Length: 220
Image (cartoon, rainbow, N blue to C red; front, side, top):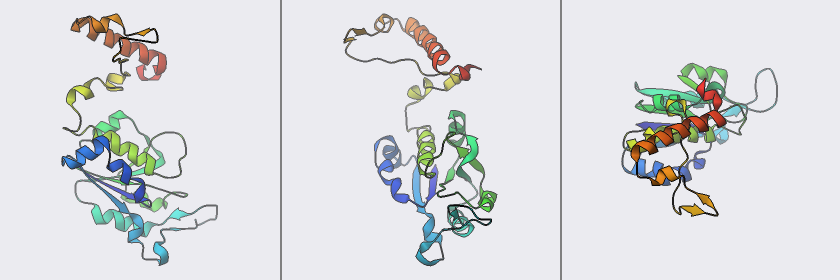
């Protein structure tokens, strides 16, 4: 898979791409990730990419020309262009799984008062990570990228992916490790039994219990 991230602040992505699972996926050639500075496509003085909105109002709006040029510089027949936007479809695991099957993602990160509306004519999908406001689209883009890359075959073992939160609309079961007792808090006895059938039944029961208590909306 290829992922191109179009942003005004490319340095925000550098530490994220040089650590942990994402770095290993890149090093193992499972994914290619490029961070592209939209300012590089400006033809104006000081690499200007924004201007005041028609009709008045506060803030600045990202202009069409540099974004159109940035997208076209990397777009091909396999590309899916995603705009991070508060008006987009709320992101979830189902969307992450869908995106993980694509060959090439182009992710647009907005800033200031947002994009000129005409930029949406070259966008295939608008995505929001929740009903709150951030200073820009970089953090949402990181969330989308992380959730997609970990689903690429070979990045994480299939066994780890099978029992995760949101599979079958259920949260994950509680997990424990050594020591067996800590500050009077004990590991459930069934997990020490060695009876794999009982352990599986316990974990399935716990997934339903935890979901019912914490996210009953997932069961509707």
